[in-house]
Image 1 (cartoon, helix red, strand yellow):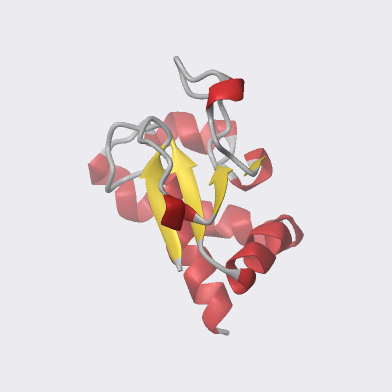
Image 2 (image 1 turned 30 degrees about the vertical axis):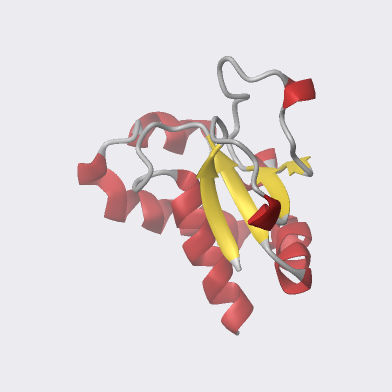
Length: 117
């Protein structure tokens, strides 16, 4: 199972492997205090797409379309995440305040679809 969770929320036993999926390190979080298994910067949206989207819910559908195109172009970078998800539970960590419209939610949808193929 793939979950998404704010990086500021405490780790839970059922989280499984925890991966930060933001391009930028989240404000106020110390690396040594975060329980995480990896930082998947390469799977985050490009700087240009991140700036264009700027967590605007009105741009959500177009953001997902563009982000999925970016992910498809670099599908080999998804292998560590796909393998971890095949082995067990995975939690995608993100720093955005909006828990419904962020790259972790979109990445979960993309990876879930890839796992079903």
